[in-house]
Length: 135
Image (cartoon, rainbow, N blue to C red; front, top):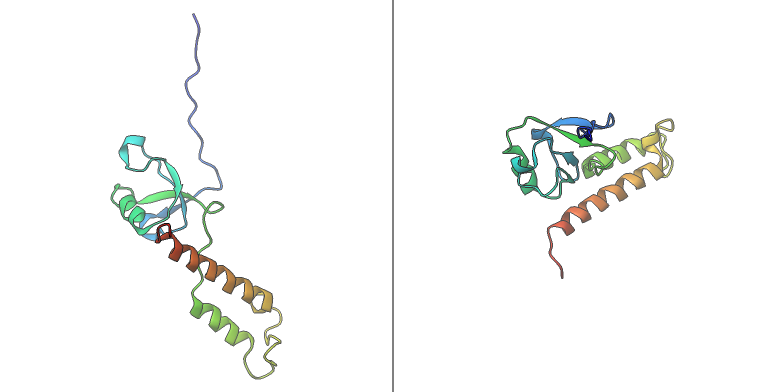
């Protein structure tokens, strides 16, 4: 007689975190910890690509969902926040327009500001492009 071992359950990755379904956004990589027949998605883990997917997840009757920050897109930064940081960094009263007034803060370094603006543009282009079909 051959004995078989029961299938091992996949242990949650300690890097995974939980988020309230009210806080879901496009770009998060989520894990639906329900049976395959308990939701309409073809996979139990995926990156959210549309507001419709968020609405569907909210109808599943769960309050929190597991997600992976490493597999998720970074949270977009509001343009107003970037502009406010730039104004604070290059404010009159010591700044030359090219040298940050607050020299010790990494956010005030020109390369950090450029990276923030670039990341925000990429996020906006990705969201805008996701709603369009093939040309």
